[in-house]
Length: 638
Ligand code: GLC
Ligand code: GLC
Image 1: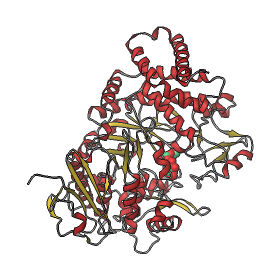
Image 2: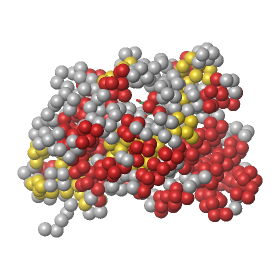
Image 3: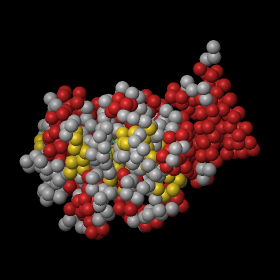
Image 4: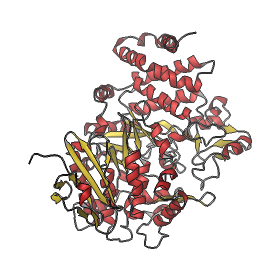
C-alpha cells in the first residue's frame, strides 16, 4: 500500500510526463521552469481537491492531465507585465490588507457608456481614492435576458455595446498604472442559454448536454425541489425551467441562466481555461459569483456542500500555478456560519461581508446596536492572509442574513424581525425614513429582500434631515472595521432610486434595477458644494478616506469590541503599530451619552480624527445624533 505522499508523487510524475509529451519543446526554458516549480509546490493541493470530487473515476489521471494542460496554456499566454505583477504579489502577499485599499463598483454602461469612455473616469476614481475597481460583468451576453451581465454567452468576448476584448485589456493596464486593481467576475455557476455549449446542447450534442443538468421529466426536479431554496421565485418556482422540448434544466437564478454540471470534470477543466483567460486580461481579483450553488446533491439544500469548497480550492490551486498574483473574492450571501467557510488563503482570500452589511441597515432601523456589536465581537475575526470586503450595499438586494441563533440571544425572533425590517425598508412602517422596494417577495415562505440606493434607504429621498449623517455613518463604519471597504459608485454623491427601470420590459420584473442608476452628472457637479447633500456626502466621505489612509491602526482586520454602555452607540477599537483608534458610532437621531466608567482605561482626552478636535473623556462623552467618532487613543508621552 502506497502512502499518500508516494501516491501524490506518482500522480505528479505521471501527469507531468503526460504534459511534457503533449507540449514537446515548450517544456524547456524559463517559462517552463517557473511553471514547473510552482506545479511541484501546488500539485499536492490540486490533486487532493480534485481527487475528493473526481478521484473515483477511472479516467481521473486524464482529468488531472487535462487541467494541467489548461494551466500551462494559461501561463504560457500570460503577458509579461502580469507575470511581473505575479512576482510582486508573491513578494508581498498581504498587499490587500493595506489601509490604503478602497474599492468601487459600477456598471460600465451606466457609469461611462463604454470601456473606452470609462478610461476618462480614471482621474475621478483616483480623486475618490480607489485602489480597486469592480466592473460588473462586461462579457458577451444576451441582449435582454442578461441579468445585468450575469448570464455570460462567451467569456472570451466583450459585449459589443461596451467595446472589445482589447479595450478591456487596455483599461486593465491603464487602471494598474494608476494603482487601481481591476476586479472582474468569474461567473462559474452558470452560463447564459446563448453560450455555445448551451446552443450545442439544445442542438443535441451529448457532450454539451452533459455540461448542464437536464432531466427528461419532473421526477428528479420534484425530488430536488423538495429541499432547495427558491432564489428568484418571481422568475420561476423551484430551481428548474422547462425547455421547449419538454425536458427540465437546472436554473438556480433566472430561466436563461443554466447551471453548469460540475459532476462532469470536463466542466471544471473548461471553466479553468475560461478563468485563466479572464485573469490574463489583467484582472487582479476574481469575484467568484454564486459560490454556494455549484454542487448539487439530492436530499440537501444544494448550497455550501463540501464539493463546492473543494472545487473552489482546486480553481485556486490552478491559479497558484498559472496566475499566482490573483486573488479570489467570495460572493456567498448565506448563513454567517457558511460565509466564513469560503474564506481561507487556499480558497477565497477575500469575501463580501454580508452580515455586516445587513446589520448596518438593521441598526439604522432599530437604533439598537446589539446585533451589530455582537457580530463584530464574535464573527469579524478571520484567518491570517484573508480579509473582508465591507460594503454598505451592492448591485444586489439586501437580504437579512443574520443568524437566528445570534438574534435570539438578544431577545430577537428572526422571522418576525425580518418581517419588521422588510416593512421598515419598503416604507410600510409608520415613521420610516426609508424608500426601498421589495425584491422577490415570496408569500409562500414570507421571504423578501430589499432594493434601494443607499441614499433612498437612508432617508434622502424622503427629505429626512438626518439622511446625510446616516449615509456617512454607514460608510464610516464600513471604512473602519477592517478589510477592504467597497463603495457602490453613485452612493458617494447620494444618488437616489431610479424607478425608470419599470419602463424597460427587460428590467421591469427585477427591482434591483431601482438601485442601479446611470451616473448622475448633476450630482457629481455638486460634489464640492457643501450647500448640497451631494457635496456634504462626498466631502464627508473624502475626509474619512483620507484619514483612514494615514492611520496604521486601520491596516488589516483585527478589531476589539468596546462596550459603550449605551444601547444606541456601537464601539470598537483598532490597534496596530502603536496606534489605537476607538470608533464610536451613534445610530440614533438623539444625542447619546456614554458614561465615564467605559473610558476608565483610556486617556483623559482623545483626538477625534474626523472632527479634528480634542474630546475629553473623563466625564464621559455625549455623541450628537448619528455622530461617528474616530478617537485616536494612542499612548502618547505628555
Ligand atoms: C450573483 C450576482 C447577482 C446575480 C446572481 C446570478 O448573486 O451578484 O447579481 O443575479 O449571482 O448570477
Ligand atoms: C445571491 C444570493 C441571493 C441573492 C442573489 C442576488 O447569490 O444567494 O440571496 O439575493 O444571489 O440577488
